[in-house]
Length: 224
Image 1 (cartoon, rainbow, N blue to C red):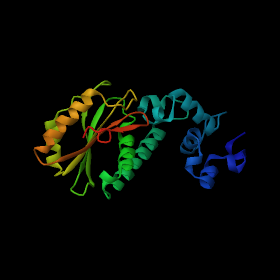
Image 2: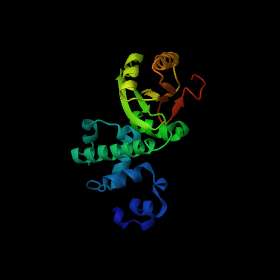
Image 3: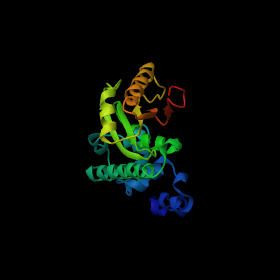
Image 4: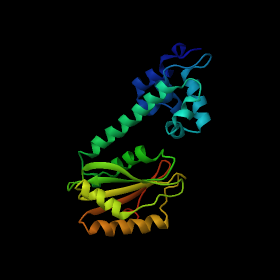
């Protein structure tokens, strides 16, 4: 039976329009993106197979082109579509941050950082450079490291803060292990960055650690 033969309330597209996207499973959302299945397999069944192969939706979204296109029903066109959707999501969130005081909107900041860093396969250290109203001036990925660590140099962060004429800064990095708990080295480098920025009158507002579905704030934990 094809999806068109399903009861209207069970078809992913109609279900989304009637009940909203939050009512759909990962497989149903992916099926709407794929639009079609393959011979003998509906878009929903294909989506379930893909999620089983990759393990979860996050792993599928972060797959490189070779792994993505190796699956039946997927190819360069679908990969390009997916990357465009992900980038639109990032830009939408960035535009929101550029119009609000991010210091008073931690949920917005965390959502944005998750879209940028959660799916990275290697550790990436990034910065949100803010103006005097704490609105976003720029987002930059400053350092990239191995799966285990990134080599962070406070002087490079200071140079970028001056380049963007930033008044404040939020730094963040991901833990590819998926565990968002800050390490002792994370705490030490936070203090070094804070001291370096104070010399040029730039305030470090927070250091956030992005794990798998979770973000930990060193400011909230009392380290800033």
